[in-house]
Amino acid sequence: FTRPNIAFVTSATTTGAMGGLVGADGICQSAAAAASLPGTYRAWLSTTTGKASMRLGAGGWVRTDGLPFTNSVAELTSGTIYYPLRLDEFGNDVFTTTVFTSTTTIGTRQLDADTCGDWTSNAGQTPAGLGTTGTATSAWTTGAYGSCGSSRRLYCFGVSETGAAIISPPPPAARIAFVTSSTWTPGGGLPSADALCTSEAASAGLPGTFLALLTPLNTTASSRFSTAGAPWFRVDGVQLTATPAQAFADAYWSAPLNVTAAGAYVHDVVWSGAPALTMQGAPGNTCLGWNSASPQSFGGIGAATDSQVANAFGGNSELCAAAHRLYCLQQ
Image (cartoon, rainbow, N blue to C red; front, top):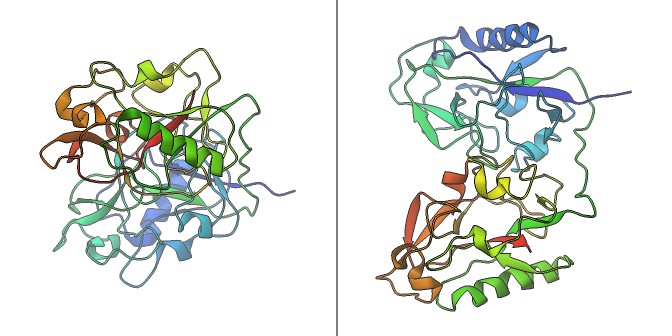
């Protein structure tokens, strides 16, 4: 009998002077012991001479709530992440916070980031590399920066077990949600966006009606969908929220909507519209109702790798002549 390893983000913080990798591993081990988590744990950190990915063992990893994080080092370093690593050793959701890593998506040292004297110093010539909890694909380990003297959390990975982190397919009654493989340029209105969702769903053999999660002019993105049906799942079996209503009301989804209908994991931006799912669209954030591809018009965009809805759906804008992916939800 084999079981998966456990992975978590520490509840406590540390500066870059954590006693090297030995000290960092000790922080992880002490945190695991305080929460009665079994096994041996190592910190997800790279040094000037070593890769974080080489510090992990075989097998997959689940979070402290039992939900799968990733199934192997190969999956992790290729961006295949199920539920983001935002739970601490006690099972508390820390949502969005930053973590010392100085590690790239493929598990190697981040060359433009400091390793804080290989994690022995509070000083550094350049900022250390940080990951962001609540994200996936790449941002979970790279993309942010902070000084070696700042206080950050650590990612901790169990290395004692060899079992798989099982992810089940979506239940038969589930409604499917995905991000498009192709990009879309405004100009044809909502029917054009819906057509791309319909086409990619059909190519993947997904039945039902799919609409783009876009904010219409003078109404809300949530108004396009019924909350009376089943909750939405990604095609890999990850459930976005416990109920469909929470998909539009909660500040966080359970995981980013960054998986295509064909099952590919992507790191990209998407067209969205208004800054929130429950905010009405205006001409200046919907590309004039998605009917304009003019470089003088603007539309809202979000980040497909983020589970915080404010970042996944809103927060930025783009010229309407640009091409970006779409979120697609089954009606």
